[in-house]
Image (cartoon, rainbow, N blue to C red; front, side, top):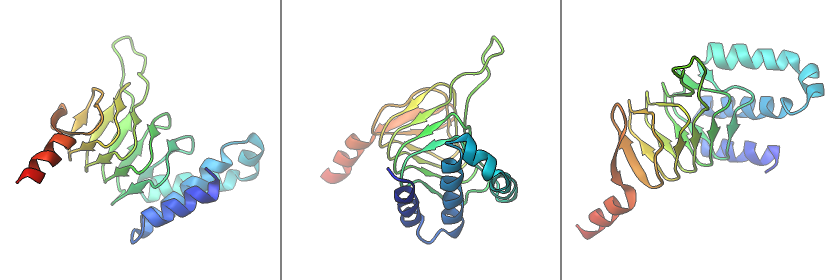
Length: 177
């Protein structure tokens, strides 16, 4: 997808969320600048401005090397921290205080970062850490600590996170009522 395609989709997805629109516009620009060494040199002042303004002032850590799919939404982004090697799919929602990153292993090295599928909804203050994969159409409850992979179409809550129910089963049960 083109640079402008991402920008317009993020702009539409974050309708009514001025901070979300501003941060995503700045993130997509810094992400595009990061592709080539030549542009990194020319736009070095913008890269520093992004770091100071978005990460330090607004409290949203979306590193320039991070991979985020289209229609990304974040609400109340204060305290949002995402490792630069994490991968976030399309149509994902993150709320305030979410942390996504690697964990330190017993041998002193660090694990790989999580990979989030499409249509993942992460509640406030949730932590997703380690070399795990979050499936498509997953909801993660507020305050959940996810350290194991989650399959598609599920709801996970708690510390450590456990699968509460399958979304398709839950929908079928509510349809019968």
